[in-house]
Length: 197
Image (cartoon, rainbow, N blue to C red; front, side):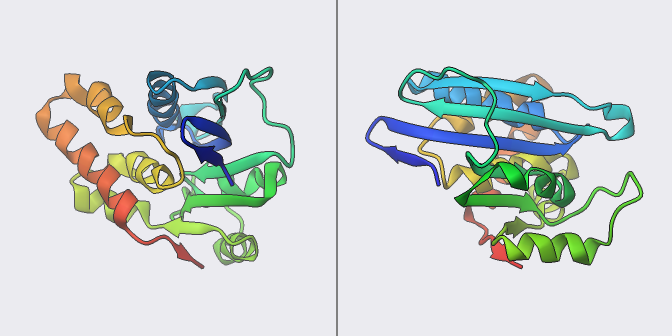
């Protein structure tokens, strides 16, 4: 799990989802909060074909010390944050034995999807923490806020205090109501108990 204390931090995170789910938005918020709070951070991202729902993922390396590579080696990720369960599962070989998988329980079936029960069973074997991001985003006011729900969920494992400020910055041009919806989505992700399936 991420190692952090008073101004100390070492955390390697993989963000995984499909095109259109806002992986790069999540990355923006976390990276900028890290920089704002004095941490070193490197980011590497792969963009799938968002029109076809291709895989999109980002590696985020956060530390109070110098970081030499933006790619997380296999077996070294502290957290896999998934906006979709199958995409979270695809990165399992990167997780440390003590690492956490935090993912939406809601599949995006834009491909010939494997048996959903088997995907969830495999996640269960690895102690994944799951949230119904669709339901929580709907409660916040927009199904499009699912990624921000997941940002709220992962924030409980990160010592970052300025994430909400970057949510405001991200959505301020879209109006106060959109900002309000996304802040509520963050809070719902933060306070809702993740469940181990």
